[in-house]
Length: 467
Ligand SMILES: [Fe+2]
Image 1 (cartoon, rainbow, N blue to C red):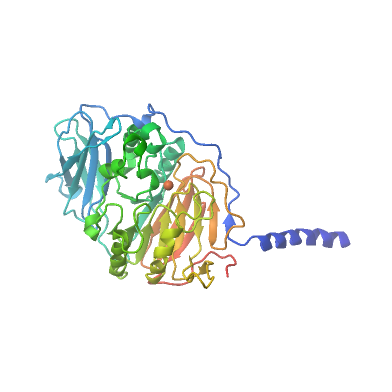
Image 2 (cartoon, rainbow, N blue to C red):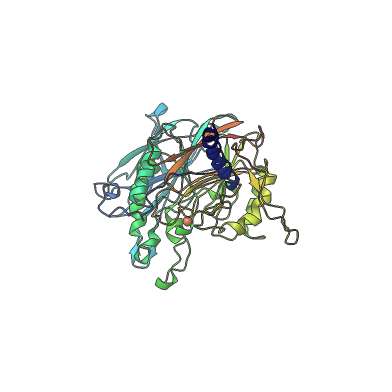
């Protein structure tokens, strides 16, 4: 009898001991291959140049206005400028083909000269309609298609994909394929920065901007990617005479910043379906009186939760991240803007930068005033959930090194590659899931039901002890 009691009590004691040291949420036991990843070589099939004279390549689209009735189509030609026009038509009216005309830009970076980079905005589109479009008119013409979003409204379902820090490694290719084959079918990608990682190559080899553009075309030509700028877009290289930050990125990837009264392509907002999305720039000035500060101060009161209940913020450097990689790099921006995020009840903040995955509870840390010592995050149902999704696949190495013990604010963390889906159902509920590359396409390695902070501000925290 004594033996049986001991055999019962010992495991119980071990469990109790585990509970007492486990302050935060879950640190997944899953460990990815921690060896540094490998970039795909220049002759990889995903980098292949499309055949034909002056064939358009690196085709990508993004939202072109505030409400989703315009699309910016961008592409590159290498042999000559070629036509600046996009021919497009809807499946409802395929006999009436229209032309939209844009502009061409080029740039030089050290010893690299870009191709002819085209940007054309298609306007006055119908909502919820499939359009075909063609570029390369007069030379090699290529055809693609996209579907416009439904009209803005509070209960419009819409499915966003989340990808960050993609790069061009074999893991990057797995992440993109995993996203494409996810049965939840993302309709638009919210990309949280760090695109090509060209700056990791000698002299920031801008050929790697071109290979990246060709690699992602299979998705970016067919659905909008909403761009956030990351540190690997800075391309600041005074040692080779390149002193204008963001030069390659800003020539290649346009955003509809003027539509939201922004003065910079790096911070702006769009409305799409039932979401209001604010994009912030971690590597532009954000202190008081800066243009970004003034813009955000004006922007937040404009968010109309009756029309767009879901308030989503994208940035590159995370505010809440318990990975030792890039730990606290987002702290200065957090100090500036977190009180606003609580005041305006942001639903979720997506960031990248850290090549791992993490989801927090709803927390805030806004009471500190230098002398009061109150500097610990507290549970706050007016605060956003912070999700770090910088696990797109760029070459990693140290990201399994997390702060211990896991902070109380951290609900789930894991050092794997993957992507996420934010699936808005109506004004009150959105289903969120994180998808690890090693799993089957429908497997949700982490998931969470979001309750909207404006329409249904009920506690939606993960069920673990948090004071
Ligand atoms: Fe980064």
